[in-house]
Length: 177
Image (tube, rainbow, N blue to C red; front, side, top):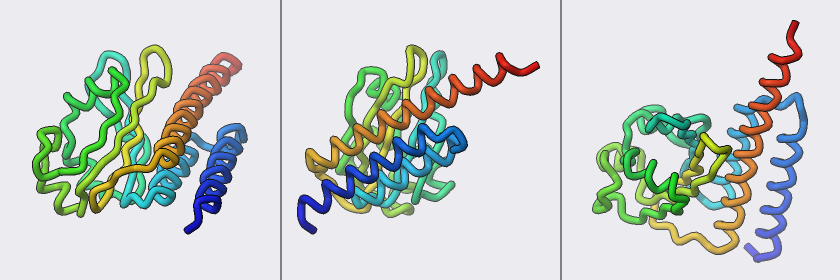
């Protein structure tokens, strides 16, 4: 596929996400699903997730997923303790060796799911809420610069969508009789 076609695909995908975020009738869950599905499809990932870490907890809650089984999502395959530290420090996570990386705590679950690599990009939603966009691959993955830019943009847009949903919820509760 030629480079211009790929860049055009990325551009139009981002425009569609922005449009969905600013349409008031779109549900947050639908927007986040749209983001994770685009992230996976445009980078060749088997699946992807957006997880949110709220202040005062060490629980990375899956708020949207695409292409991964419920069994895998519930397995705790990636060490949340180490992930939380990396997220709060803003470290991008690239694991290309599930079999030997100590951050993978459930290798069997990853193997059953057919996964060998993950890219995780952390984001700050607001002062107390952090999120991570993760993409899971069935083989080793070395992302291109353009792919990382796309994933960074999609992750930031997911934060914008979460923040707008929270503001709209507060506005509606304030305006309720």
